[in-house]
Image (cartoon, rainbow, N blue to C red; front, top):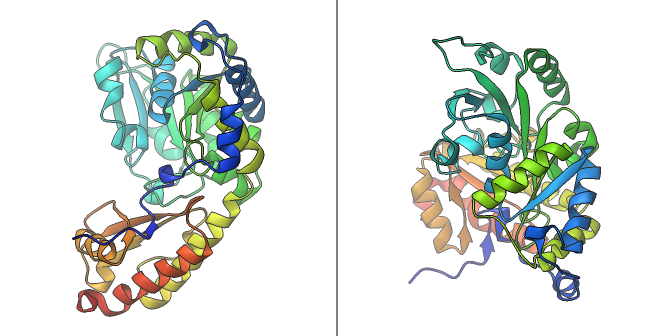
Length: 353
């Protein structure tokens, strides 16, 4: 019989709404959001748009939908978007850009997911004529999930914008964890947002809301996104009860992300001491740690299985890589248990099993 999970580091999507958040949800004013009549949704959309320096916003049920709407706004069927090879929009959204919108895509390789503006600028083909696919959009992910929670350098974002804008290529930011980048660096959300035509941000990861993401952009683009949201099946009714959770999260759960970052770094430091080469703590900028468990003689599948026997749930991202994600429901005590349970596996290898 599998052990009960005591420390769940599978993802920050596992956060559960706090009692205070539940109270805020229970008293939310509501209306029909398909008609644009939910006052709490509108409050959330206006607030997030303002934080990111854009005119308007649209509440969506998921981050994947927010991203797919952003892609569809900029790219028409038969044209292409480009993103790095580990980008969530390419790797973890079930081929939605192709399946739902008929969009082509290409990718470049980015070490640890970090943007070097020269890579997409060299890859894009804005005017392919009658022989090549036209590039209409570059997608950047910040922080980068499969890159290990890395924060994109602002100077590279600026350089990319300087190279794409004159050539008519748009930019979309998959900012599901942009809150983490903001807290880790002190860079204002609007200082990131101003360089992109559209930005998606998630409320149901580190911020702890049960559901929801927000797409921001110009007023005209958000009007078009509202139509596409309905086409994609994302029209919602009295969802102010969910938007209220997002508003509560913005008020109470942003700055506390620094606690997740500190706990992830503390674990990474212990792991690096136990198995040099498994992780460089200096690369752990936010709440995600990706361990190379092969240096201790493990495959990712075997390591994850043994961790599960010890009541710790992890996510294998490659044959040798294991991801751990800190969040609202993993505190200092949980981090201590993760260190106590996993560090011996790194020190002793499979013999510890």
